[in-house]
Image 1 (cartoon, rainbow, N blue to C red):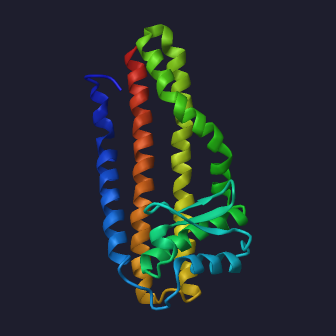
Image 2: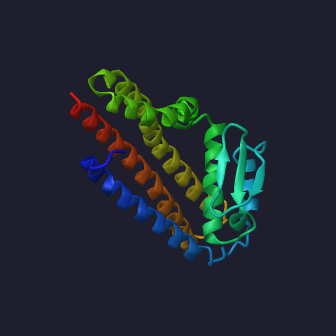
Image 3: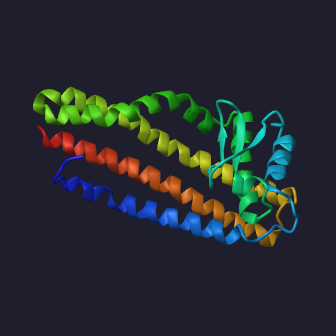
Length: 228
């Protein structure tokens, strides 16, 4: 944010973790995207079956463009799978599809952390947009801008909380995915290890994001106190 700002050092560990996570996701996905599941099931069909069996048969499964753009939209209640996953029968694709189905099942079961995350999303969306501009204006205003800096920090705190509450949501979805894939016979015990590795690599990106948010908040607090 500021030239000569030494506090950038604080976020370097999170940056390193994010780069590692990105590498792990790409390499692990590439490895297991080349290995077909012995069941021969396609990712879209797997997701459809898991949703039906889990009581979320009303959730449609759609194909979306892009690479690894897979997600569950809780507002529209739609599960979207990327082009490389939707029609694939690879271990990686089935793991990703089951993970997103896990989110839909969380929603259907009113899973607490997901409900909380969804409820604060509008505040987080606005807060993350305004937090740094308000803090910056307050910082350059000197002592008189303390209120603006505090408001910026408060708004950013919601984003930090959002990142932290995302962790149990993602871990639980992956846990559900692994259990369902094995219970329903989509992956055998030997193949399930590959799916776990794909989902663990993806989870690392959320850990890196949460670490970055926490360290950024710590950095803002130091900068605010430096203006006293």
